[in-house]
Image (cartoon, rainbow, N blue to C red; front, side, top):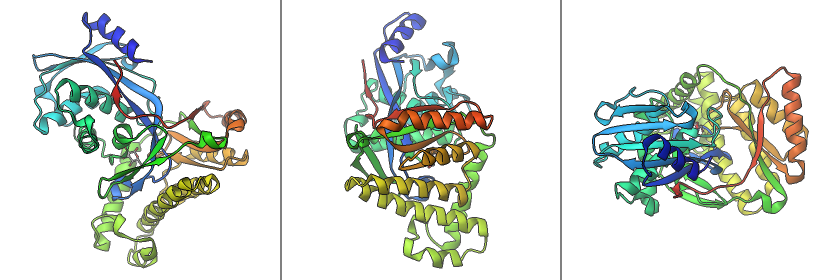
Length: 388
Ligand code: GLA
């Protein structure tokens, strides 16, 4: 799936050249899970896999949208009809971006859009953020807004993409995915501080140390994901309120025990413990990366997984199986990544053991009667940009 393919499909469907093609990456989060909506720290990388949007403006207030995933059918929506809950499905993310731009005072006259993508959909790798951010990059240029030209503008663009997802698509997500897609740089992880909105680029090139980051898409589909995510978020917000702080970010690591003593619900205590210790793990992981200490990075991945599994309770059989199998094969560390309940896991492995680990995971899934997973090694890719 490439920019030229998006342009070709555009010509076939709309009988004209697109004005350009823009793309944006999916992401994996190295560590710092379920921290963004708690004002905490996260450390995602952009994936090499990207979503490409070919676009041309129209002047009649219509959005006409087509995606290879949706079989190249053209969906049409009038910009004046875009509202929470309408349209639905993948077009909500596209229309949501146009809506968010209008909310921010930019007039969107309409557009024809063709989307192609090699970001696996439903794998917890932020195919929705890649979609929003590719469309945002296209509008930013075609409407001469210029946000993507400077870091502060990219932060604003990420925020608008998050609004599209929260308000129009109705997913109460926290903003990490859009930041990863718009604000990373190649060969770096993005240290995102969700309290201040500040970012720092942290070199991430395990390949220079004979290592590789393996992504395993479990292909596990779990019902109730959205409800579970919203429920975790609400529990954290109530706990922060009970503790008299704006977000759980305000609970320092050395104040954790005292904070836990003040909460009487066992489940809330476990959730808070995850968030506070996870933020601390991000700090330690950045320090370890800066020291090229990948053993410690691996250990932190594995600790993060245990915390997500036991305290935050967002793992599942398939994710635990990937982590246990990878560790059993000598991975330096492994963890679920993204929201959980299915989706993908990551493992830090020696480069010459990629095949062994992937094959062992595949075998373990087959032995457990599970659908075959998909494994692939990734390097840290670049942010949303123009391709053609
Ligand atoms: C999803 C959300 C993010 C973040 C992660 C969990 O990917 O979109 O905002 O909350 O889950 O870390």
